[in-house]
Image (cartoon, rainbow, N blue to C red; front, side, top):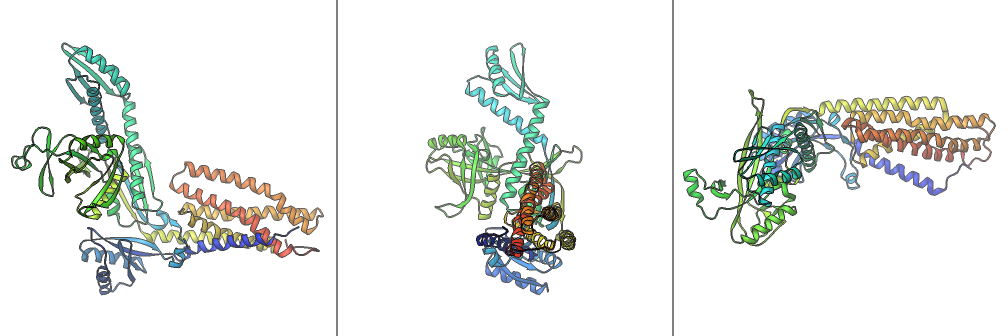
Length: 616
């Protein structure tokens, strides 16, 4: 009646062993480390390791050995004070290298080879950096106006409608025509193509003007789209630099919060977050002399003077393709010269324009302009953001064949420069520049204090539940305690395997789950006692207790699980952390309370045919 087949016991044992194995990495903790990586395309070598070792040893800082981890050298320390001193020392003494403080799990190699990893810790537990970014909505509106002006011009040219002028004044676009017929054609065309504009006309003498007004609703939509695109771009960029479980969310109408757990050196993160880089592919002016233009300071009409590594270059103002038409970008090497390059893939529109240009310009030169807009600070008088615009030609190469959607951009100097450019292009351009208006670093010491308090709360809660169950239900209480302990182990294992991020609210979810997990056992044990009072046999009471309590347990846990799923779907960072631990805890507690505890009861009491009493 109360027996499991051997395979079921073995399966339960296998699940418990697997859970214990993958929960194990969390007991090893983390150590503070300093990562050293080259600024330029210089590999970290054994000589670099020896130099780092000598500097740290001479300074009397206790540390583990220096090892190579990927493209960086990593030095592990026993305390945060030594880590900070070592970073200051290496930053001062090591020229040509970047240094960053971080935390690294102490998982043994054999366990890591089996796929074991510790739980990701949130900003409140691990420490890290917090940025508050402000989106320049004025620039977003200006970008949209430039795009509308360019698109209106292209539409009129395509339909062969000649215009006399086109310009913006405040939020109103004016397009002038020479005849009433041209104006009428343009009104029908622009009303259909540009729904964000409210169209009207103004005729005065021989002036026939179309007026397109950006309404308040359209302006709000532009700002909303800019914020949404910036959120998406920032998420892509943060994913590219490999930060585990970042928090990126909007705050109000113009601001974005970015939290990067584990990052303690903010320089690299800031360079990625507020960078606005894009490429423009332009024809080289083959007819005019770039040196003469540089000497006179005047470029010919239709061309712009640039510099490629100090050498003047004249490029046509016509843009063949831009970074906005880019689908993918990967750092690679040029097959002919072996120099660093970025392999580029364009969308259909960009590919068509590139194909048309290269087909007619084999043997001519094409320039690649890298454009960066670097935010500085707000003007104290106007309150507007100030920028430094950097434009340079990174390549001015000869077109040796016809190509369209796939080709390489060379002339980047170092492999690191190629990787950074590929990252920015791949992640996408910001719809509008952002400025970091608030920056906070949460030290790992504060995070460790939060961890200690969170672990203590789990331990106290678990201990109180174990004592109560043992006192009130005796032998069955001991069985429930074993199941409850296994439940905590399985919950930690699942959080580790799924790569979930543990935060303070997540620890609260674990504490709540510990309290809730015993509910199922209480329902089962009370049902068994009720069956015994009604005169049922002991074996029959055990079977009925588990069978009849199952539907009640399932109903209670499924409704709680639904609530947890809703919290995860609609909540933000901390709420999601609570929902994840609660969801996993519900599933593991049902398994341990119903399956594991039943297996233990069956092992103890199931083989006794004439069982007269049980300790419950």
